[in-house]
Amino acid sequence: MNKLLIKLFVKNHEDIENSVVRSAYGMLAGVSGLSVNILLFICKLIVGLLSKSIAVVADSFNNLSDAGSFFISVLASILSKKPADKEHPFGHERIEYIAGLLISFIIMNAGFTLLMNSIKRISEPEIMVFEWAFIIILLVSMLFKAWVMLLNRDIGIRINSYVQKAAFLDSRNDLIVTGLTIVSMLIAKYFNFSIDSFVGIGVSVFVFISGIKIAKGTLMPLLGSAADKKLYEKITSKVESYKGIIGSHDLIVHNYGPSNIMATIHAQVPNNMDMQKVHDVIDKIERDVYKEMGIHLVIHMDPQEVNDIRFFIYKSLLIDIVKRLDSNASIHDFHAKFKNQQIKLDFDVTVPHSYSEQQENALSENIQKELIKSNPAIKCDITIEHGFIDEE
Image (cartoon, rainbow, N blue to C red; front, top):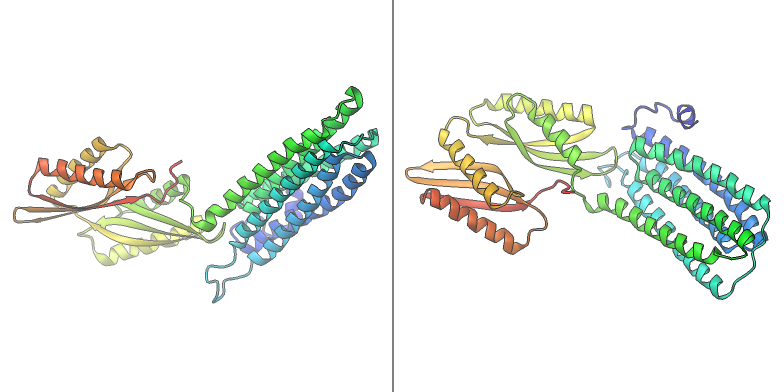
């Protein structure tokens, strides 16, 4: 059914890198969720008031907050497709992340409100009224919610949208809330024991934690997160596959929206290669990466020695020393200059983010000591830095 809806309401649905197509996906998910949640709010509120169940009433207002979330989703879909302008030269797609953050606040508020109401009901209990019609209505509502959940899951995965992924998690929470509410109503009828308030407390904590997780997921790209390891490897492998490129390092990925990614990388090239040929190769890589991955890649040329055997001897020596001192560290951007009896080595050492300043200084000093042991004529210029790739 979801595939049919996508074909009917999303023109050129395969072109997911297109901001207009992404907006259409968002509109489909948003309008569907908005309509379903308003309907569920009305039905559950009636059931909750008639049955005097705090869990059902809370669940109904949770659906109302979900309707607000989907309204934000629709609004974000409209605004994010706006083209770049002089104030926003990178476009407006980050609105999706802002919308996801707003939705997370709505979810956390719903969890907190449910917690307060559940605690209050413990001190002021009410006898629930049981009717099978209420159970049937809640079961039917779960079917509608499951459809909205799966629609947002499919669209969220398809277009890599934080808004739809947040909506999927929120809908999943609702299914759990409603399911536990039905269980509490059945226990109250057949065992004459009410767990309604305690179920409400447990669910409220679950909902609140889900909101925190969604907030974290949407804040990361806004703050500037490390590059995903798979994307990192995909880009570096692509760059290094071209003739004339002998290595790469310092890939930095800038996220301006799910379909608006920019990146920079240092590409190592032979120092005896014709500069015009190097320029042509780099231009081709940048065009190909954009065509195949939709990423605006800027490449910095880094000439490397290819004829002097001493370069490779000292580079190999350095790699062995660093590996011996710390297997989690690595070197790049290695340069060697030989003048008379002097040997000048310039290089960067990448260490984990967990490194303290003392550890960085100690590693730098130990590397220099080991190099001087091998040859007292060596002088070093070492830069300790952290990587731009996700370490997890």
